[in-house]
Length: 203
Image 1 (cartoon, rainbow, N blue to C red):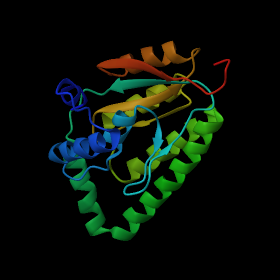
Image 2 (image 1 turned 90 degrees about the vertical axis):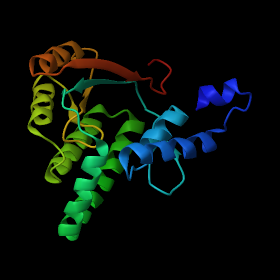
Image 3 (image 1 turned 90 degrees about the horizontal axis):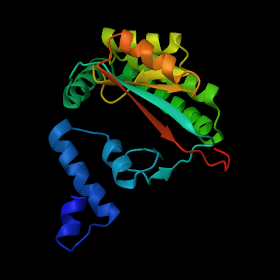
């Protein structure tokens, strides 16, 4: 949409682009959160709350992540619908867990902005435990997460809707090769390294 609107001579403002991108997300995922299109449109980390203003966050130090593909394809719409069914059956338990995930996200934001790698890793691990409690993980993801942590990742968790797809692991330049090899040995189809540049001048 960004490329096409620019080609036509009517480039879209970010707010309009985000709204339109969300509509396409709904076609694919049914009832998406809106975080994917928001991050992609604005091209920077955000603290996302549905129907609330976007809060941009900036890493206090350079962060390095490995993303590993489990090879299991799972439509996000399916896991979103599954969680909705779980909530219908036991709203109190699911809502309590979701509230805990919200608290963990705020702890993660604080660690992210302070460049506290240990605390950020702990928040990622705590988040994964809660997602597993919601039955959104699976054996393949659990094995990759365990392999990453055992090889030196500071934290590791599933991404997206769960039940397949990818995991993300927080690493350091020293640990990243060991973690990458461990993920491939544990069955990852591919592993990608990505980094976020920190605010400090020497990063």
